[in-house]
Image 1 (tube, helix red, strand yellow):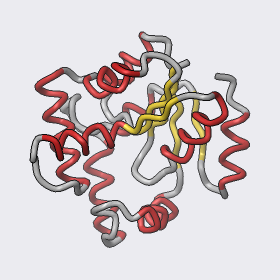
Image 2 (cartoon, helix red, strand yellow):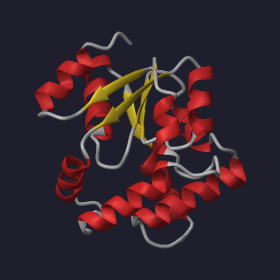
Image 3 (cartoon, one colour):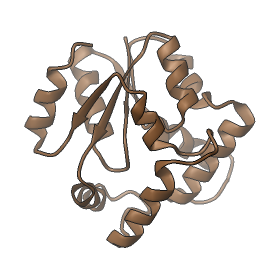
Image 4 (cartoon, one colour):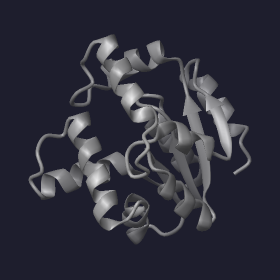
Length: 177
């Protein structure tokens, strides 16, 4: 079983992935962690959101648009949940391998609050900056850049994460993977 959760920043992709991984005894691999590890290993700067986005694009440009899926599946070719795919080639490759994709969405104001609680490097910014970054990540003419909207459009399922965790988990339980 291969499942991926996609969507904008701080929408609950990792929470949903952890829940489904536990439910089906799968391994959860956040693709953002793959990029952050690559940044650290190669001394490519800070782990803030902007730099991670730049390095992910560079990885896709140099190693193929689906490199993050390939890296994720190297050690876990089956029974995996991926979170944070951002490029259409990643989705195409996962689907060719029989994977299913779930698009999560939530109101921007909720996601902004969740980002502050999450507390990753770069999450403590103004709402205006959060919106500006979101607009930059939502759609880009370069297929190896972050393209949240086109990626979400390729999803097999859509879930609105606009309530509490119990509500999210009930919505996830209703999906027939």
